[in-house]
Image (cartoon, rainbow, N blue to C red; front, side):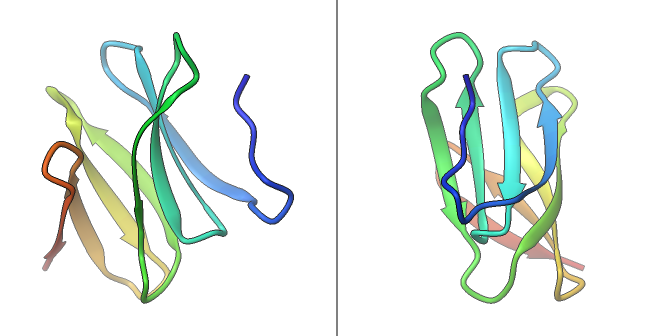
Length: 88
């Protein structure tokens, strides 16, 4: 099953359109992609400025996510390249 360390409170999660992955962000300032079949973390990224509080997979690409942060910024994250880009 999915687990968090005792210092992490999950803020948001999203299921990929193919239902093979879940994206989770929480109070440890990290967003994670987890394979639902194996339970393995496939990718993770930490925001050094603030916490991510919401996220969503792109509808047609389970390797791309939109992330919202507590500093009112929106990012896109490419999990293959690990690029985190500020939008707007």
